[in-house]
Amino acid sequence: MDVVLGADNATTRDFLSMLPLTLTLEEFSGREKIGYLPRRLDTTGSPGSDPEDGDLIYFVPWGNIGFYYNSAGIGHSAQVIHLGTYRASTEQLDRLQGGYVTVALTDP
Image 1 (spheres, one colour):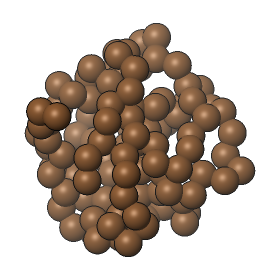
Image 2 (cartoon, rainbow, N blue to C red):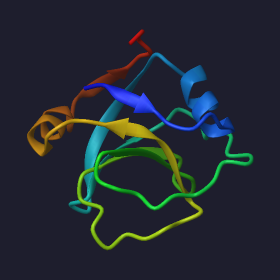
Image 3 (cartoon, rainbow, N blue to C red):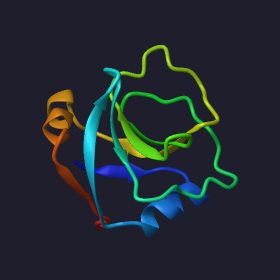
């Protein structure tokens, strides 16, 4: 699955500095697949967001990333920082759940 990173901000740059990394993803609330990072990201000056399906986000309070696939009814939050967007079906996301996933930077 490819992710296109969004805005150039402290959080996105800090996330990139961690790559490559291996995470375990889990289902959360029928809305997203989440994975916990080895440390918290720098959020200085990074704006909150109004998540949409297909967004990769960083959730500040828990220090995790999330792949949203069912964002209906979720509004803007200063605690949800948009990292990028991805294209994957729910079935593709389900295959990632429970196993180790390697996140790496690649050239387009």
